[in-house]
Length: 394
Image (cartoon, rainbow, N blue to C red; front, side, top):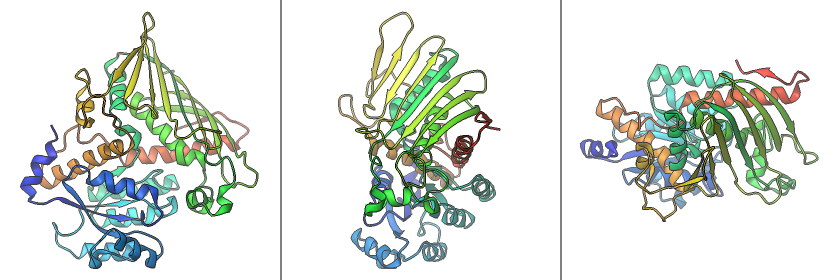
């Protein structure tokens, strides 16, 4: 049961959100908008959709935003939305800009009392991450980070297997995310997504590791609950003249004794978005693959492998909540994003209704997950540059 929808009738309105970034030529902005409104109880009402005020307003016109809420800058949006009454102003802001425009608007909106949904990686530095944590705690707002792979139903089932002890004591984790789209130096040809992702001023200290490696770290943490104790990284830039890494391999030691391997690459020829994870315990193993997301495999040590298919009646409650179609009708990328937004918005509704959100509603990546991811990126890059190699995560 999706409790938050009962409270929509009590509120007598839909939740309202605004977006920063995500205008013309943006892939991910449209994904977020579609995901946020997919429940039918949330509406897109305001935006500052580009760092260029002219392009921002043109983008808002494309999306039929009302002129008075089609803002040229996020600062203008913050000022004018803050002046509106509760119920008229946006209930949350969604930030889908390049990484260097994450921290300042996120902090400003939190300090103004707005709920925030921020794209990954959360910010550039751990100092910024800690500032966001302090602000979120002080102003008691809902803060989500869109590590969307945790929204897949079969990822939630994998997590339940680990928590329930189905796999036994976890001993080995293997996670990888190969892509091939940056095999050539397309940033020199004006490809927008490549330009900012390979620019240290906008992307931060990491390239592939910050972009897709952050997803790998979050997926491991979400499914296994393991905490990294130390890591050893080999970070490489294969394409001549590129300023940031495009490939990295990381050995992981977890608290409690488990070991792991993490590999990310954006120069793996022929690969698209092949994030996958294997978890091996003393009683069995599991495998999940994002390019075939509706299945999760259980591998017992003394019998044939078993394939669990989304949409059937043998899953945990979190899977049932995150499943929207009957079996045989695939759910994938958009629906995973939508599940993140479903839980964030139901948590906001619960707050507005004056009750504590349920555990299922709170099942989304938070500011604390985002901060851990930023720290992980920093540690990997530090290890890659160090002669010492193995470095502590604490």
